[in-house]
Each structure stands twice: as C-alpha cells, then as structure tokens.
Length: 97
Length: 97
DNA sequence: TCGAAGCATTGATACCCATCGATACTACCA
DNA sequence: TGGTAGTATCGATGGGTATCAATGCTTCGA
Image 1: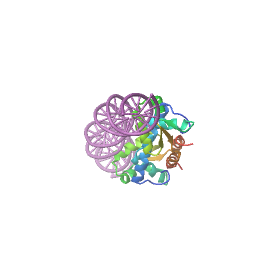
Image 2: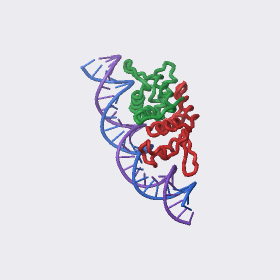
Image 3: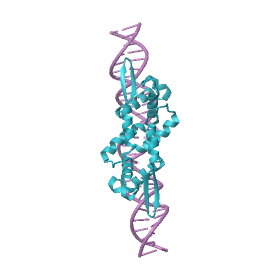
Image 4: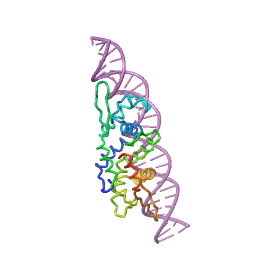
C-alpha cells in the first residue's frame, strides 16, 4: 500500500483485514494468544480476563478466524485457538516498506 | 502486541489506530499519498478519483490526521497532505516481531 | 471591498457492529 | 440414555460511522 496506488477492490479487501484489528477486545485476544507459552488458549480461558460474556468472546474469535488471523481446533469439549503468524506478516508488509 | 499481553487501555488506543485503517476510502487516500512523487497531494486532487464528495474526503482526512497518520499544511488556498511514515512504522511493529 | 475558489464543519439519514440473554449444538460421563 | 459442561448461534438493542447537501470559514484576485 505504501509503495503503489490501490484500486477500489484491493482497498476494500485490505480494509476488512484491518477492521478485524480495530477492536480492543480482539487485540487483547491476540496478545493473550501471543503471550501463551504453548501458543494456544482455550475459549474458557478468555472469558474471565476480558470481562465479556462467552457469547461475545465467541463472536470476536469468529471474526478473527474469518480474517485468517487465528484458527481454532476442537479437542474434546474444548476449542483451542492459536495465531496465524504468516497472516500477520502479510498485513505488516501492507503498511510497510 | 505479538510479544506481550495488552492492557485494556493500551488495547483501546491501538484499536483506534487500526480503526483509521479500517476503511477503503482512507486506504486509498494513503496509497495515493504514498505514490505521489512529491509526497504531497492537495485535497482537490483526491475528490475526483475517489468518487466521494468534498465533504466526505475532508472527513476522512481529519480521521487520518487525528490518528497521526497524515498531516496537512495550508499553502494559499490549498491544503497539502503528506504521510507520517514514522507513525506507520510504529503500527507495523505493533503487529510484528 | 467584493466575489469566487478551496477546504472544513454541521445536520440528517441509513447502515454496521459490539454486546447481552437466551437457546442450540457437541462431547464427555454416569 | 440422560445430564452436564464448553462452545456456537440467534434476536434485540444501543452506539458508532460513512455519506451527502448545505453552510461557514479562509485566501486570493479583481
């Protein structure tokens, strides 16, 4: 983006990606995932620290998943989420040299 | 963000910055500024290519300015806008290693 | 001094989204 | 086969925002 003009379609797609980062709850979800030693956090471990209902947390995780920033894996009753660091790298180059 | 947990206040501030990038019109404003040889573009040169009213363009430039991503300088009847590349570098490190 | 051009601001409107409570779905266990 | 716990989805609601037309403000030239 910082090195070439942007068409309307490309701009819309990139805007959707940044929209996923434009919420404090989602940024905290990401930072908690980044700080987890195992790289994974189960949904039940998000609800308390974020002071949001379980439904709201699930909603945010879905948005991050649709943006390709996180992915979830079901193991038994729990769903464990982790970051897709390649996706973050791609976004970083979009606003970088 | 990818290397440390995020408090509620820090998350809110970072979310405001990404909110400024979460709009296709603003992303195109940024890319037009980045592509300009002189690094500057006057407001009147944004209106046509973006297919938005002058008031709407001014609105978006204000939001980008409040986010610290662009700044405007009045010269005569015209206001010339340019990027703050340091601000972009700061955002880049927020989502990177 | 007056008019015109460039830009910013305002008020109104339509649309999107974060949030919650309630409910449905899935997996495990007795 | 129920019952329970974890997760996802749904419907409703309040707040935010992109957009435009209209208006106000600033600067320059006649």
